Amino acid sequence: AQSVTQLGSHVSVSEGALVLLRCNYSSSVPPYLFWYVQYPNQGLQLLLKYTSAATLVKGINGFEAEFKKSETSFHLTKPSAHMSDAAEYFCAQADRGSTLGRLYFGRGTQLTVWP
Amino acid sequence: GAGVSQSPSNKVTEKGKDVELRCDPISGHTALYWYRQRLGQGLEFLIYFQGNSAPDKSGLPSDRFSAERTGESVSTLTIQRTQQEDSAVYLCASSLLGLANTGELFFGEGSRLTVL
Image (tube, rainbow over all chains, first blue to last red; front, side):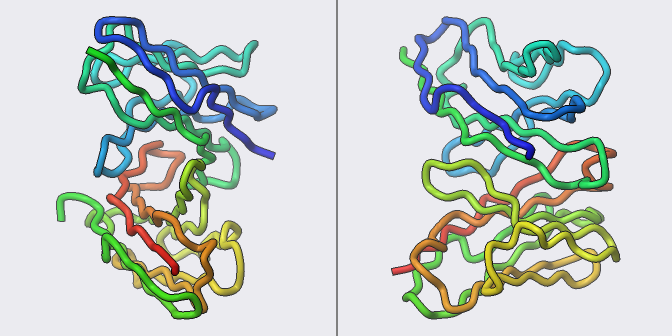
């Protein structure tokens, strides 16, 4: 069965510190992978996605994620946190096969940024 | 409209009542999805519509849940005889050509359902 695991439901960092949000996927075939962000009182929006090209994917707002097949991971990073990064982050995967359209989401990680 | 629109934004109902949630996708988007987000949990897939194809209903948790979509426009999610465990935020999303082509879903802000 497909599953996405996000390690840590809450992550707190100081402004300017490195942000690292962990995501591991479960699939025998490398899936499509996504990071979505949900700011307070807003809908989810796409941060970045991996579909099979470069393993290091750059997204909006300075975020990037690296696909590592050997670790079945797709961790999200940002070198320097900003107060405006405080939000909930969701990792998601989708099959490359017939079940198109179905995203499997992790439980989310709430990022807090301290001044 | 400019984005995915959902209504109502908040709904409080009594156990046993029926509720209807509405989603207006982005114009021209052929694919439409419903997800459920319970407190402290990830997004749970409910149903997927793609053009005129038969919808993927595999995520609907019980026969109390149903959804319809008129062509490539509005969708309604109906929950009959609501139970307290149905309390959640119901999210609608749409995409242009389905996941394989764009990989990006555009989400609405959700409808928060509270069943007393």
